Length: 584
Image (cartoon, rainbow, N blue to C red; front, side, top):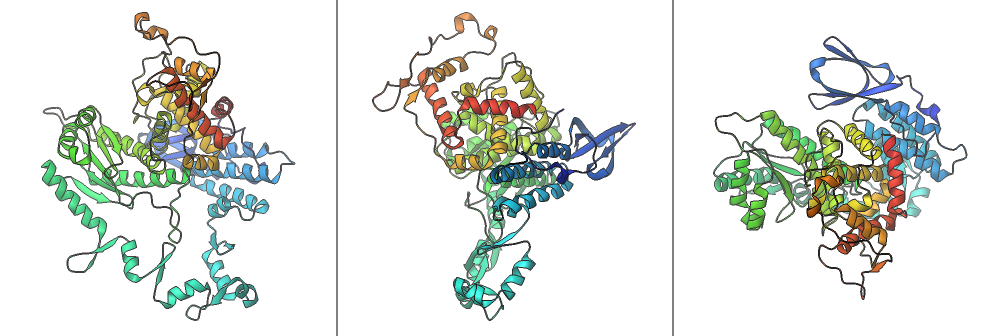
């Protein structure tokens, strides 16, 4: 399976030369880990030859699946060989960063790839010494206008820099520390303040920033412990049943009926997914000294209800207080998982109803909750950073972005069941499996063009549409990572004109991929597309609810949104996506 990334700008291959097999596999283990290396089966053993010749032997019973592919280090070498020898500094830097991002992404399968990743950052800095992505990738520390490779180097500079260099810039040598400080920092220390999360604050303010509150006796106690007790009491009183466990992490509070061990795993997954998707969308978590932007004032409540009957009781008991309309309560009773942002952000996850006189499938309960939690993190972050609603394709793609990456499944989709002729993929497996599915769909001409997908509302997307939207978003994040961050902050434009092609896409998107799936007397005829553009802005043609023109406007808005930042139309972007998909 070819994993090269031929379309990316690349660097000198010699820097990536490492003795390694030409082929490497992804080996998924039953404990959730995925390893990369050349796998060889022998009896009840699987031997894995990894990067730099490292070998690991596994029991066959530990292995869930093996997927063949090209090793990451060979892919990176191919990327390197394709950079033009006379590349401009911009192309050179972009190429190195593309390889570094690829290697960083693959480190979850092979941690040793960090060595190659760091080499790429070093090369970037030779052409662009202040490149923030490369500096951060190497763990460098910024202070003032300078970058330092380590805290030790920073402290040495702050102790030994000459007055002739520092005083003209407004720094003072602080008597208590012997270090150069800004005048404002020195004044704050004289006032007895301490620096925490990038700000100067009083000791009491620091305790509050660390998550403490004072109890009725005036003692400092962790706010999350108090809230956990309150949630436990509230659920027990309202639902008539005490949760198995209530536990919090930095950004999530789990009210769970799973085991403590399974809940801890999902808590860890949620935090990893949250940090990753924030970074991908341009809202990084930051560091202790320079924390990222606060997206949620309090921890997100995650209700792992497990049993469908318990979910129905939760809806009846909590739904009205959470602002659920009666029709919404009945609708959610038909579902198993969802998220909402008001009155406070919360996730709901449940499985099927417990059958009488039968034990629940504990493993299946965990897998269902894992799908929901991973998907909802991507959806909630998108909802927070882009309030006001999103196109259906973007919301679904964002959900799969975290579910596929952190749970290796693509099940949590708010979409219709597919009734078309497309070749179905197993919805459990790995990211590679979904790429393979899309390649087959694309080769057979069964995938819907993105221009059509853009026009569809949520209930009209099917699972293959959502997988395509996910892979398209993955491509944009790979090829245009900085532009995607800008896009996420960019408002969705409102077009004033729609083209005949966009109206034609809106019409075609509502037709089944397999005409035989709908009897002729049930097929809706919306007529032919127009021959001239239609003005839909002020003074233009009125657009009626549910019409082909309204759907075309929805699609045209999405196209204009992408083009406003990427400077390419959807036809060109989809052509790029197809070429990239071949390399996956």
